[in-house]
Image (cartoon, rainbow, N blue to C red; front, top):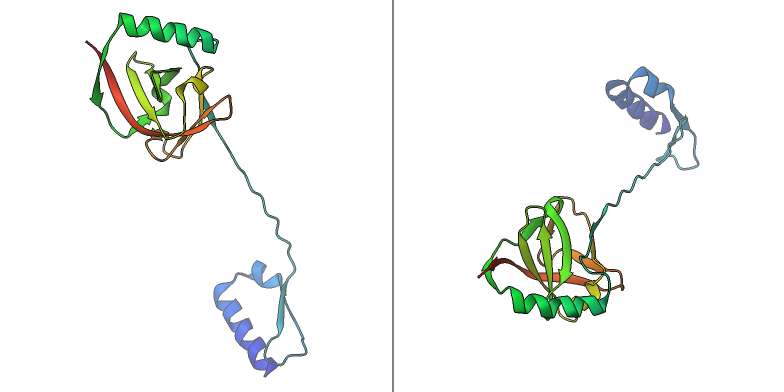
Length: 168
């Protein structure tokens, strides 16, 4: 029986494998008649490469006191009308961020467009006074209900929705 199994393995090897590969196979006897041990004379090594890209959105303000003062000045100066925008933003087009009113984070794009991101439950905008961080997704986008925004204070927040801000 051992001879039959060895012959079958050898026949399969001749049809599938090259001569170099056949030179690496060794058939060893075992105590079990139905299971000969097939060993490879080569050794294999595993290499794993991980890559993480962290994107930083710098803040326009330096301290929480300046954030409150700037927010008061800003609400007096300019009023915005919100307009629906898609569920994803290209990360490469984002330039900076600042805390907005209530649970919102205002994101400035490289084109000068202002977008308001509504943060998930339990997140406060004031935690993002030093800017926001995010891990770059495989598609290069920041999407609603998928990606997390990280603050330097340790807060992690999902974005519920994006709105385009248009000055009135």
